Length: 283
Image 1 (cartoon, helix red, strand yellow):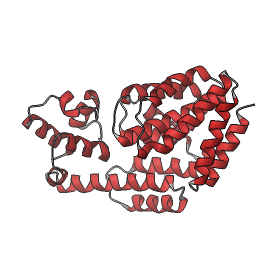
Image 2 (spheres, helix red, strand yellow):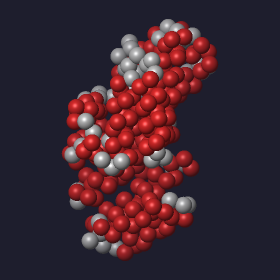
Image 3 (cartoon, one colour):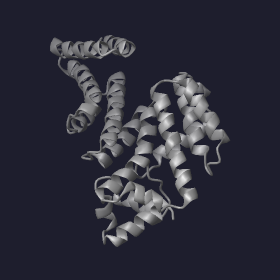
Image 4 (cartoon, helix red, strand yellow):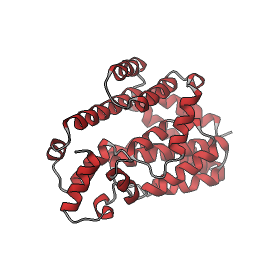
């Protein structure tokens, strides 16, 4: 039995509607497409969905077809490994993962390879090396998405540099609207990451009015330890924007305090980049 079929079986056995079953984890329309097999649910969302509906994760995966279970588990493992290597800025690990995927028997590995090739180009800071057909496919996939799952959010967050400002404004606004109020920590991290990128773009383009909606959305996410860094970055960019509308030195002092905090925890290179960004964008 496939994931969508099994979720439907459990849902019907509990007498729940798709909306009640999906809760705050997925939109009803996206969940409906998961059930019929046209959308793929991320590992994090699936586990959250099972927990929310009091279903044993072990029991659930035990009922999947052996081949389907193996394929999905391997795909999720690859996606987690790709994200981990990317955030560690490890080109060597990304290349090893690519080689492993190429040699694997995943029935549809083109998507994982496409993501890998894009991430390799970003790590190398060689955006021009990305195959244009691959880039167009990636951009179209994100741009045309009616609903975003966690994987698509993560992919978009890392690929926002490939879009122009107005396209990013449209996609980001849609994403924020879809997930505003969702308290899943992984979704909050991705949402804040997207908002941070948008504030960065707003400052570079000197489009400070457009930044307000993203600042308001970020401020509605309750602070918690796991998003401490993201909240600090929101405050950093917010104070740069405030300085441009009211040239009060206190805003710059707050920015410098945050840079010093980032430096104290050992992110020296990143704190230098922040200082350079601040200097460049307060003239």
